[in-house]
Figure 1 (tube, rainbow, N blue to C red):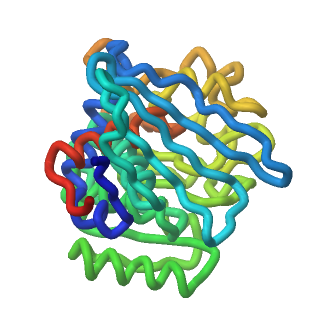
Figure 2: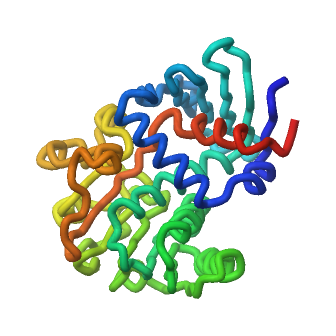
Length: 307
């Protein structure tokens, strides 16, 4: 019988160190060819799209995630894990939590690999679910001593800072501008729904690591070419997905395409990561396909809270 995970089950069973470790393993598996993870596919639904991401961990499992872009409050993401030998459905996760913690785990893996070892200050632009899981995962790999948050809504950024203090026991405060949120921060996260740049790259201090989670295509992007120009190291979790965006992803176009590296290759030691304390490193998160299924498999292995 397939195991069923709700958002509450995922939140109870999955901690930040586990999510980061699983995503690091997934990135390495993809780089080494064990995780087959093609770019996402979409089907038009008339006013929206159904999106599918699929993955196959050779010899073990295959599965997929499906979601739509309507934004309807009753719409739900579904992640399905199949046994790779029999095809039987082993587990199903319904809701947003698994996908959000997957993205946070990828961000945490990037921070662990690329941020300075002494990085303790964190600035985030955005105050939604994706912004939260980036802080949640980063706190598992760096001893954060302060978090600053900015978003368009004063009420939401204040609530976000209060949540960081209450749940992560990290000093946090809301600030009124993006510049305040990123100035002199060792780690910066962009996790917005903005279609225009929210960051002036000139505000970044030497040595900053940046995770970008939101829109990054030529026609809508939460950061501009100035961030890519400042980056000494530019990586993504899925070069195949980066190259497949329509319209194209900024970092996948000249003059950046030749510089956009594979985070999995950095983790494997095949290419250098950060080589200097003053380098600016940038991780463009695209959502490596199959990683939600990878994380669901890990949840099944550690014990399922629901049937």
